Image (cartoon, rainbow, N blue to C red; front, side, top):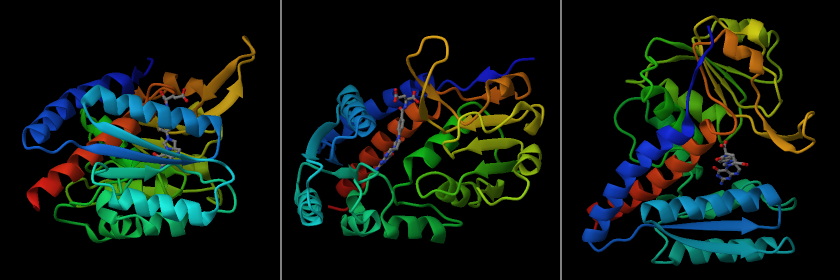
Length: 295
Ligand SMILES: Nc1nc(=O)c2c([nH]1)NC[C@@H]1CN(c3ccc(C(=O)N[C@@H](CCC(=O)O)C(=O)O)cc3)C=[N+]21
């Protein structure tokens, strides 16, 4: 048996159609959602992600505002750009593209954002609300990759409640917040948060009904680590060279052989990446809707 593919492009398209309607409704009330992006430096991967985000916005009718600073920008320059984005009326939500170049304190910069405009859900206030929100609704923006993974599972009717989940990777943007999200009341997964010091990673993964790999080690998750019938979500994206073509190729954290064991596998590219991007749009729309309600 070979696994079914969790098609992130198709799932994200369905969500985009819903977002277009919500954007139209906001515009009818005189509010145009606007996403700001703050990019510092000239890392090609970051530049291409930011470009993609502006393209996504255009597709659903969200305005987008680009602030690009040169690699030579000082921390004072970055702080000033954050202050401007906090104040800009047309920016209803924004992101600071990570990683910032060496020498900038990312946590300090995230903390300077207006939490009501934090489209990534990475401001300490919003991460704190995720910690506090064990039960009851969360009205703060959720980190985009965790939110996208939950949508991906739900929209394929993969049962989360009662499932055991092995998350591999404890990073700020994926592993840590995903563990918090999946263990909320109403979602009700049982989570093992694994990392580079986990003694027997294979044994933890073998127990899991759902595996999420978010470490950036190509091919780490092997077929004989995976419980037959599991759902395996691949968040890794490493740029490598293809042995056949010699061209740059995106490599996930999941070995291709896993497809022969799992019931569901998300591809790289075309899996979790597009879901992350669409959940950013969802956050921007949600924050604009909240701004309308509170005026
Ligand atoms: N403040 C901030 N927020 C982020 O959400 C954030 C960030 N910084 N820094 C970098 C990571 C990475 N990330 C990706 C999102 C989508 C794809 C994506 O759509 N990937 C395509 C392939 C794109 C390609 O060709 O590179 C796919 O998987 O199909 C990839 C990576 C968001 N991040």
